[in-house]
Image 1 (cartoon, rainbow, N blue to C red):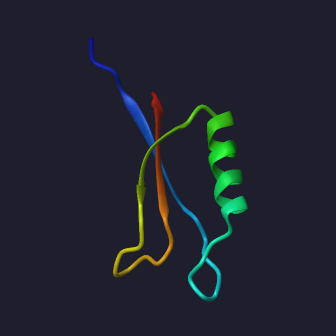
Image 2 (cartoon, rainbow, N blue to C red; image 1 turned 60 degrees about the vertical axis):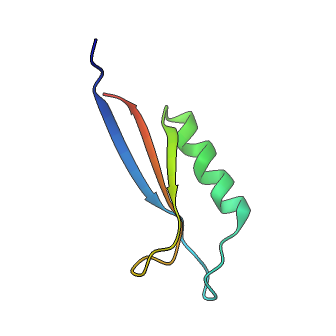
Length: 60
């Protein structure tokens, strides 16, 4: 049986020096978890994006 998924992409905002607060990351993970989203990947900085990007999924 095939499942259908919805995906959510969230960029964790960084500070002026490129760092981010672990508390902000934890809050985002908790928030999305309460909404039924499951974290499936983290994309670290790329040449065009300096902050971590969180990728979540849940059944459609």
